[in-house]
Image (cartoon, rainbow over all chains, first blue to last red; front, side, top):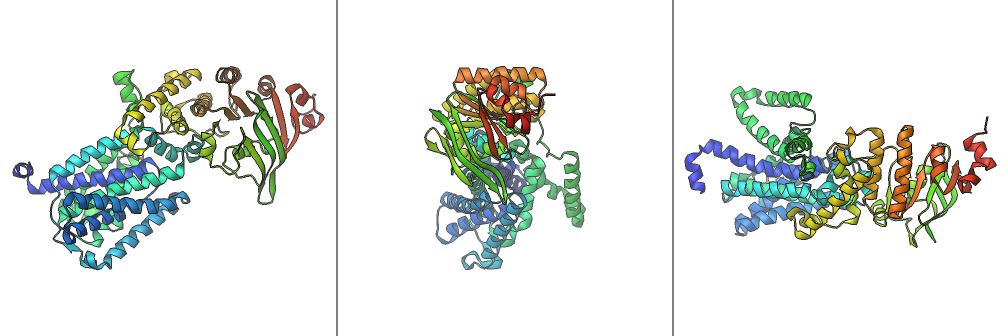
Length: 297
Length: 254
């Protein structure tokens, strides 16, 4: 199948499609934490690097099978998500953002000095097991599970915490537990994305997971529309394509990139799909069958 | 037997004593009013009952269960629903979802059950959905299910808060100024609604309210707070004619 795909698709485009898929997985994880539950996390690349290094080291040095490495990477990231979730019991907004930035930096500096991870040089020779088919199968599964989750009791509770924590608690929502849950779930997706990334890129270095990567992922969620699955997907696609398309302006790339973001946020402050009323569309389409998708607007 | 018993509740914020040895006893299926001037400590009392504040002194006993040190969500799960003085809705969720969130404390689908759509949680979803629809009909918002909560008119938002609190299947409902900002027609409808809820669902209601007409009409017992002290309690006729209440709150008849 993959041989077939690579026969018909130019390797350059194939590579972009792979990165889009991986970014969707990463951004959907961050969307759970920041978009849906409203906990500003600016260290998502930290979770990603944990998944990347864990799975890469397992594959290369322990000879673990690919799927097991991926799983272990996701679990390791989930564990750290759980750990970092605990301070969120006490912190909010800017303060939480600072803690998550600090966390991601600690992880990066740790890997800079981590012998089995090749220190600053990084790891190279990671088996390239990540295939197009695998990435996009996972993307589809994750989108479906995400949509189901967000349209359920737990998903609604996540949104409720974002919207009004005191009212959420008065409805019997244990906000402490659910915030940690959101962090754990979001981090596990970051870990999975990191593992896929490592086994696609062949080599990884600590600076691949620096602060800018976290910001890039946050941009995808914010640009697309906080808490919206279609929005997050669109944000990931655009922000993966944009730097490629801006290659023509060469060294002014970052300038254009920044300006575009500013313009977009001026004209659509809620994100591209953040205020698209799925309610209205549904109402028009099928006046009767309500309540299926309104949470995942 | 008293459903809710507040014993010598004291609340201090720094040097300020917001509540001072307040005793209140609410009987089963009563509509109980708490009145008093601004800053008398009415909302503070609600926040203590619902676990938002930990009282400096005293005990909150609900059906033989001590609530003092419980988290707000555990208090809610005991069957105490509430509304807020300054409306707290989930603005960017639909009206329907606001009420469905209200069922959180009385449902139990977990993370994986929800995500994988297991039969148990699908069944529970159907029950939650049905219940939410009923409650929205009850408060007269049946045709606004898909609106965003923040697009509702003020009076509608207050009624939505009541529906959300009712989704907990509470045995005690706390209403914090339910009539604030309502016109007289809406107030009359609200009174009907409160009666209906009490009679049909057999629950106990405590309300904080400034509208004397509503309070005197609807409440069977009233407590009056002033500067954190309870200065009177009893049935409306008694409270209405109490010398201290007239002086500090109602004002002398012109």
